[in-house]
Image (cartoon, rainbow, N blue to C red; front, top):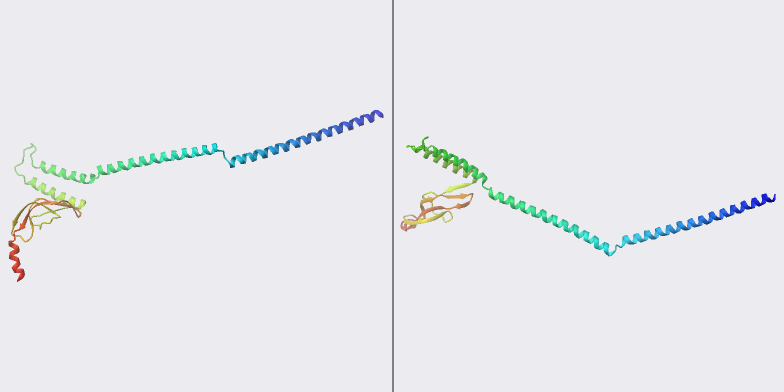
Length: 225
């Protein structure tokens, strides 16, 4: 009986010891968890502080990145503008170089007609024909066709005929004489004048006959009567 009591007491003591150890371990684990939680909170707070307030080195690094990006954008814009400028210059030069393509294409057809007219003035052996009337008639036809083409398609008109009144805006006097006329008159036309729409591109070169006073003196009394 005494041995059983002793065994029972020893088991109770062991149970109490185990319970004390468990409580002690539980307390240590709780303290450790609290410590870790506090450390995490402190770390989070520190991280938030760092995020909210970057260091000067970080600010400098961010500014350097921004400057590098802006510089890259600037260089790209400069390259794009330079390519655009070169392309515009090239297109402008091409437009200038080939501006008369349509006109020259039409004139080529006229040159072909001249070649045919000249070919009609020689024999197959290359000797001039005795009768040049076909050549003259062909040249007249070509001249008429060319004038019609330039007038209808390009608004180019010709003027200047013998007997026209002299006009400083339309004519260029290369010689003058006096005669019985009331107003200056073109007595000879050396070169025809041409107008593109309403603008004179070449004045007619003419000889002008100036009033000698005879016609005016005769008309004055008649106007008085």
